[in-house]
Amino acid sequence: MTVEIKSVKLEVPEGINLILGQAHFIKTTEDIYEALVGSVPNAKFGFAFCESSGQRLVRHEGTDPELRKLASERILEIGAGHSFLILLRDIYPINVLNAIKNVPEVCTIYCATANPVQVIIAETDQGRGIIGVVDGFPPKGIEQEKEISERRSFLRSIGYKLSSSS
Image (cartoon, rainbow, N blue to C red; front, side, top):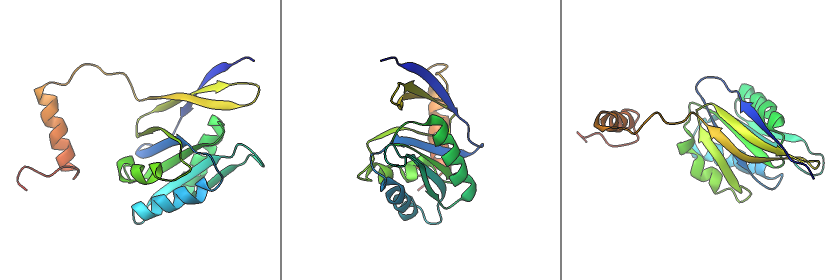
C-alpha cells in the first residue's frame, strides 16, 4: 500500500469562522443542524458532510445558502470519509463548539477557527483521511505585559469577560 500526503487549503470568505471535524453516520447532518440552531438563535451557517459508504455523497444543510454551498464545495475538495465542515457567519465557534462535541456521531474536532487553514490529507488506494490541520501561522514570540493587558481588554470588549467596573 502506498500513502500520498497532500494538503488542501480551506479558502473561505473574510470574517467566516469554521469548524472541521469527523463523525460517523449519515444522521450527523440533521443532528449538527439541530445543535447549531438550538445553540444560537437565527444562526447563519452552512454544513457539509462526506458520506463514506452507500451513495458517498456530500450531505449538506444550513440556514445560509451561500455558506451551505461553500461548505459543500470545500468538504468535497478535502474528500475524506466522514469529515464535516461547518462555516459560521457572525458566530464564534466557542458559541457552538460544546453543542457540536455533544452530538453523538461526532468523533473528532480538528479545528475551530477564523484563521487560514490547510488540511493535511493522507491518500491511499481506498480513499482519503485527515491527518491534521495547520491552523493559522507560527508564533512570533512570547507575550509580555503589554500584550497580556491588550488580550484581557479585548476579551472584555467583545463580552467574553466581565469588565473591571462590573
